[in-house]
Image (cartoon, rainbow, N blue to C red):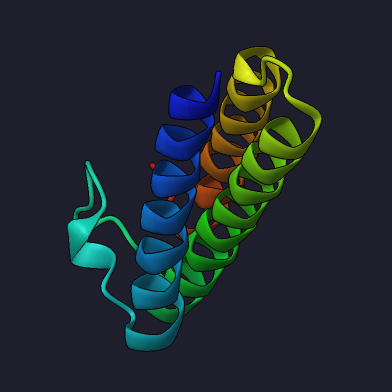
Length: 101
C-alpha cells in the first residue's frame, strides 16, 4: 500500500509540474496532438490545460497522503480522479480549436 501511494504522489508531483509549465510558460507544444494550425487561442489553451493538470496533481497528492495516513488502497480514487479530470480537460480543449466550415 505505501509503495503505491508514494508512486501516486510522484505522479501527482509530475502532473503539478506539467501544469505549472503549461500555465506559466504557455508550453502547449508538449501536449499530445497539439497542432498550431488548429488552435485559435494558444494562451487560453495553456491556461485551461495548466489549471487541469495542477488540479489533477494536487488531487492525486492529497489522495496519496490520505491513503498513507489512513493506510487504505487508493487505486480506485486515483483512477476516478485521473479519468474524470482528463475527460473534463478534453471536452474543454474543444473551445480552443478552430471549427470546420
